Length: 567
Image (cartoon, rainbow, N blue to C red):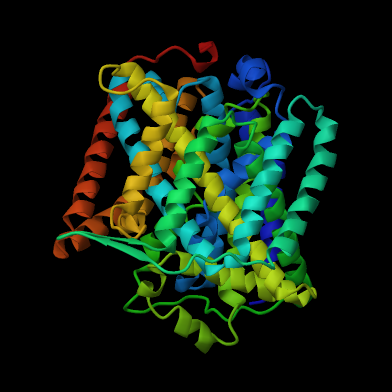
């Protein structure tokens, strides 16, 4: 199959999805309107300074959602062949991910300032608060730990990206201060200047690689801590995350995410231009099976989440994006449009995984077994090196292109880490309000607790890889939370006497896929005596049963007040 054909099919599907399906969702299902007071409108002057431009919000939203998983998961998903990976990325993006992204922002705006657990308590009753908080915190801990680990490994794998990354962060800091109080038309000029400076930083600073070498081993009678490059970078990233989370969002996190999205757009423009010019054929088979590889279904849906459907997107949309949006009608552009942009990123990773080898034999050798991708950062390395090969088609220097791609992937990982810590702090603040005698109430302490918990999970193995030890349960946890998000959307639409098929069908599908995969995993963990993962799996099942009971009670009870009446 020719890669250009897949690009054309995707473009047609995405244009149709945004032009028609998202319009149906916005006007016929969610009925977006601008007469609702949003969190951004209420808190503008004190926290944000001015109304944030919707393009700034879109860029930050996209960067925070990508998590690098849109790349790593998509590259790995080609292990089952290009047809399953392509179909799931495209179809799920248009139907499920776009609906989820738009709906998550809509629901968050109708319950302004409330986190997902508090929204669940409003919709399902107070008993829903605990299960939603528990699974959300677990999901964020796993995500933050994985992002920090993969980013730390990429700093070591691509030392030429270190100085450009931190240089671009400095540019973003100046951009944030400049854009505060500016008119919308001034955003374009400032963005182009910042993007130009960022590309110059990649080109110039990339010539000076910074590599941390050597290791310091701290040993006790039963424990060893290896202070190698990965551990050092993890510590630096969480220290940065703590301080970035303490700043108002307009100062650093939003402009840095927006600038990362601009760099991502530049990268995708280079890649797809090369695809149009060279249009290489895929060497990956249409379908691929091997005894050492898990079955395509349900594992494809667990592996390729970001870029298709990811539960943590609800957390980001609620805790970051919806709190910046001024007009509810922008939920279509930011929520559904962001899902399509992630789909384009996922497609680029699928094409690189399917075309980036001289022959099918070379592809088979790289994708020979599932164990080859247990080290997640290797999938990111394949993407970075594959992008450099495509950039060379346009005459760009492969080394510079490799640095650019590495900086973009690092930027996406850190943007998700920044957002994850911020949302985690919000959830902990909700717990502090309900249990003031147990939880600290000061924001500084809550941020410190959020960073400490994520860092402790990452570093508990002594090598900075702790988050990846629990990674096998992330996919099921992520899909289950997506199911919970669709549950809230379904019940809210039912409450408003609106059609629910567009959210109910993805709910049923994801519920079946998540529990199918989780059941298989729990059987494996039992046979392998992996009691920690098994215990977490049991906790997920218990949470699901509890939420299911609450849903049945809701359906049997009389309707609650209409959402339109929520202030």
